[in-house]
Image 1 (tube, rainbow, N blue to C red):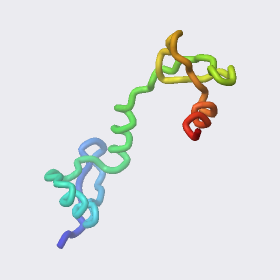
Image 2 (image 1 turned 90 degrees about the vertical axis):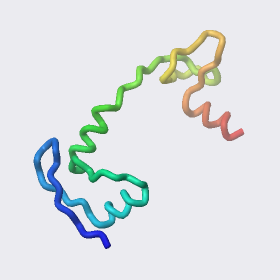
Image 3 (image 1 turned 60 degrees about the vertical axis):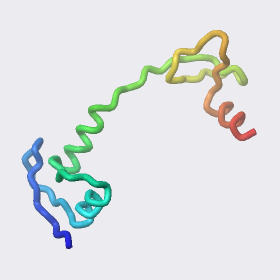
Length: 91
């Protein structure tokens, strides 16, 4: 049915294999285009698109420890450290 294909990466120019299993996966997902980048270049591209979240520091409302959170804490809402948040979630 499917056979391995050798493709050329459009970023680095190196050859890479588009395996029969990958082709089957692409077909199951309805993807019509073959990959244009090798695995390494896809990873580099994916990681470069991620943005670093700004982290904020607050004191945990339960234990008083310093907590780093990805949102700006508000004075009228409690903020919990990871441990206290997990304990509250389990209860």
